[in-house]
Image 1: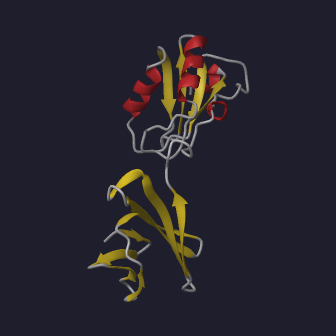
Image 2 (image 1 turned 90 degrees about the vertical axis):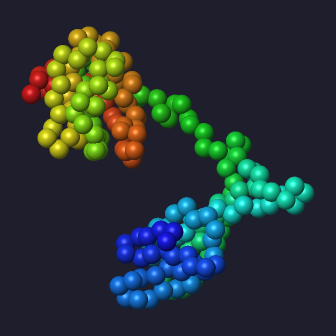
Length: 192
């Protein structure tokens, strides 16, 4: 099995691939893909992301620049399309725009307290406290019971500024899909 999505299975058997619905016992054959990276649905189409290694005919071996990524799509009407996404190389790799990831100006003047949002579990309360303790001395800390946001107060404004700069747009925990945001708040909000 190469993948599954909402009960459908992408299965390889011998040299054939098929998408199978075990509940209805229906299946459809698709081209054989050696290196499947993902199987997912976009609106009414099912997509298979796969890699094809084009061989260098002179040396008879694949090189990094000869890997090609493809999307094979199959819609509910049976139309099938395969398109090349290209090859990741330093010239066309995604480049981070530093201005885009920069911390935006504060909405209010800097204080010793911050509200930090967009936490997504799993993580421990201790891990959050350790993260926030890296940039200063924490005087008070509070996190809501569903662990989506917290308030933290530091011993100085400089420490709060350093924390805001450190955690803003931080993907934490690393396996999380959200990026943290932080904003200064009055100390009365932080002392719940």
